[in-house]
Amino acid sequence: MSLQNNFWKYKNYHKKIFLITVLLFTSNILYAGEPPKTNEPVKMSKSGICHAPNSTYYAKTKNFTPYKTLKECLDAGGRLPKR
Image 1: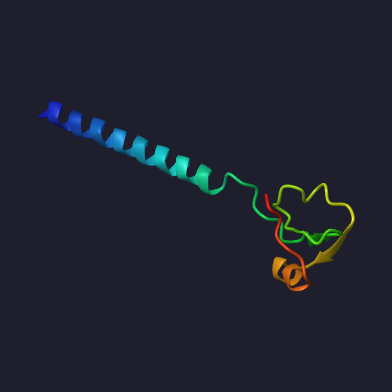
Image 2: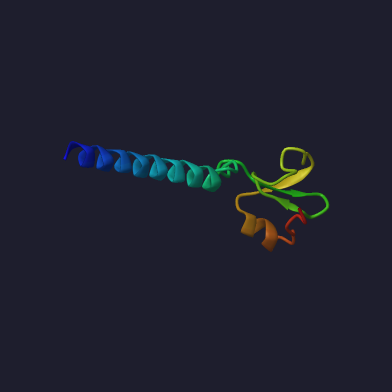
């Protein structure tokens, strides 16, 4: 009977390890990108492109008009970046 009990403990151990591995893997996928910074403005560049805080060229955009939200920027005539 002890062999049977050890088998079930061993099996549950692998289930727990598998579950933890899956949870860690999926959490890395969900949070791989940097979360958007809510206190930073959306930048509309002089060329009319709206850059959200998590966009590729946000930090490089120097001459811009700030907006509180992406929707405000788009409503003001801006467009989303192609990349």
